[in-house]
Image (cartoon, rainbow, N blue to C red; front, side, top):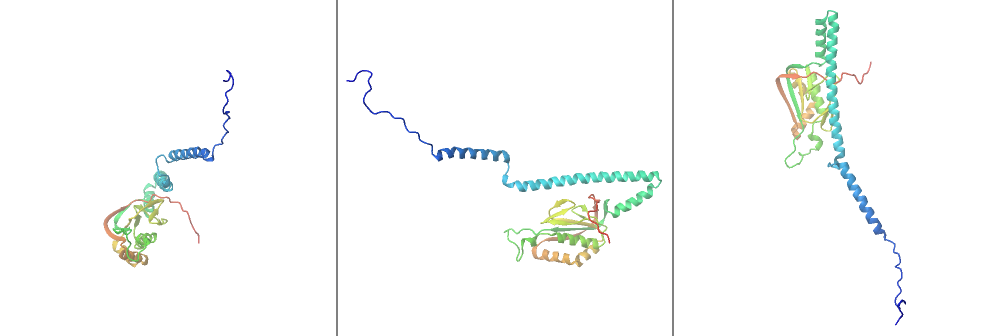
Length: 259
């Protein structure tokens, strides 16, 4: 028997060797933390919206912002034109020529399309071809054949002017000598605003003369062929009374050439 306080014979206790943690044990928490930060950042950025639609949303927002700015500028232009007219009347009254100045001013404003115009005329409508129920295209047709193009609208406007129209408007916007009709895809760009089809051209003038010029135009003939082949819309309706608004866009010349 061993004496009290002596060590009993047996296995000696040795310290357990230190084991280094594996690479996976270190990487898994880091990856999980990074994923959590990514999800949180995406949630704050999106704020309930679709991030993939960012470019489309930004473009639509820019177009809407541009249209609002143009509307404000047109309102300001109208105010300035009214102010100029009042100042002109005041200056003429001091010289005793109010009636003469007003007659000259009215005639100039009418010829420059700055005042509304009412009379008999025509209403011309151009529209894209309607899609078939099964989604197929007409025979030998391309997608580009089924839409109204800038050349179509311009051909109609040129024919109406050639017919001696007193005034022309497109989408209720009065045209002047410097107005340009442009299309981006199948969207009409006019005086800084965009319009989708159908496109409506209204003109005050003799309906018979307008129809004759439309029939004589080679460009309009191409449009008529597309109407028959692919189902585009091109209608001319006589109207007993039309009112065209006055031109409200900018009157500044951007380009000029001397001879």
